[in-house]
Image 1: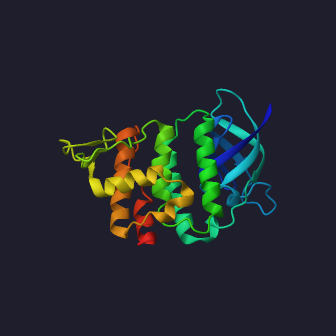
Image 2: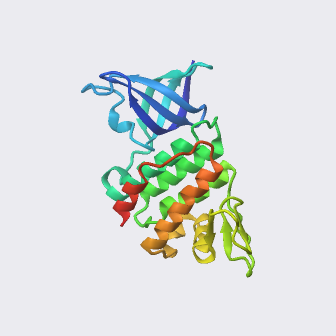
Image 3: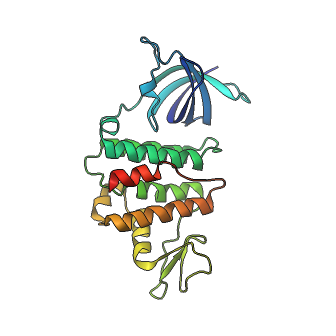
Length: 241
């Protein structure tokens, strides 16, 4: 049976000389693997440039329950990106976010809330002319709400440490090393709470931005099973420095 669904491209793997298997987070079926033949042929209907990380697509798919690899009848970009493929900072940030997403939601079943959050956030980022250098930080912190480990925003004047393991402010430093001191922790919470449209109001220097990014990755490691190392992290830091 044919089904229409929106999708978010996560990972493309070569299958043969002219075929690929693409893992796509779909609105209707969660993450699915699709075999696509002939993507490198000159007249291919589905081309490799449509299958780049976090590209947003409309699809018509064949879907069989309990089948590991599905088939696609039609696929087209929707919306077509205006800036991400042509802006080195945006494209590097998207590759980094794609890797984190792939490791965070790889077992995710269909979830309309998570899908809509990612789809709308990436759409906004592509359209934004003033996204600033904090989008990836805010994106991951806001995503944590949908993944079930949102940080607590409650703090008192005597609480000077944010415990990444517990996700809340504490009066004393925890016995483990996974915490942030108050000044960067307040930025951590501001990034979580501030709408994307207002992120440019949050001023963060490069050193603090690196610290917060490192702590966000620790936060994900603590709260996501088998999260592992993010390989695109250093490339991102080099581009943003």
